[in-house]
Image (cartoon, rainbow, N blue to C red):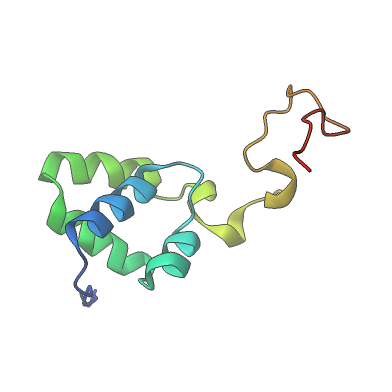
Length: 99
């Protein structure tokens, strides 16, 4: 497989990409949207920046994981994002607003 060229990022951006790649609910599409790099480039960045054992653990964890690929998700993100199914529904805003 041909290696993808990963653009240069600041240390802070690299840390954020790695953090997003480790998060179960953050898709590769979201990383591409924010940083402009494809899944293969994320993999190359992770391989370059992480210890070999950590990289292998990450690859094993995300390989084939449906939540890392937007197209493979079976539910609508707008309905499920950041909300537990047991979370109480709020029907109106109880916070007074300054006028």
